[in-house]
Image (cartoon, rainbow, N blue to C red):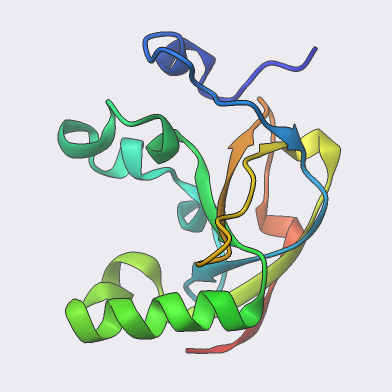
Length: 133
């Protein structure tokens, strides 16, 4: 059994990580150009006071399609005009592997899901920029 990247933090959250399937398939994420490790930092680390208590915040936020990611970004940019400073202004896609971690079931409406990474996972080489948002 693989160890989660943030196992110590997850132990303090009941039911976390949730039931996950082995990572596989193509996923989409908002990033900066060029892509760095900072593009794959969970929000629980970026904003510990606000998010560390939330299980999903320890996962990496992903989308199952370009369209789903674009729709969410367009919603966010209207609500938060400077969101690009936090999330980046490019869309990247990457091939997920079982060795990367476990994924939650994508939300049927938004196409959003979380990757709970395994220790040692580096997603930077797996993702490539698709386009500027």
